[in-house]
Length: 95
Image (cartoon, rainbow, N blue to C red; front, side, top):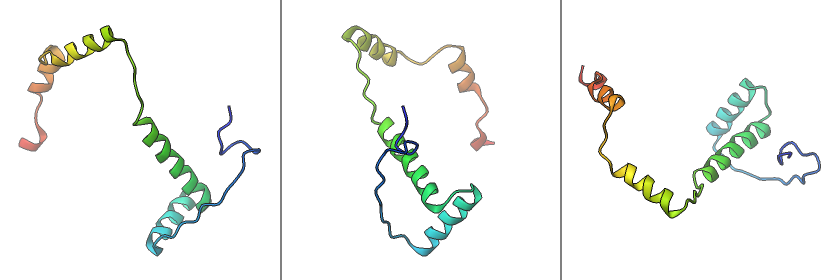
């Protein structure tokens, strides 16, 4: 399935933005570095940010038994070899 940015039949609509001069310069520098136009750079960055925001809101549905097992695991005290190794690791902030 084609995404809206790759489907030539998808309608294109303008979005107008007002930004401070230093932000525009920053965007232009980054776009040039990636070999993109300002518009393409901003569209790509906005699309990625939108996808991340939507993915952060994902809803996971499970049956009651699965949920109860999950909650029981969360309620168990931490332990095991991985936990012990983590707790005994050197703390970089206290050196």
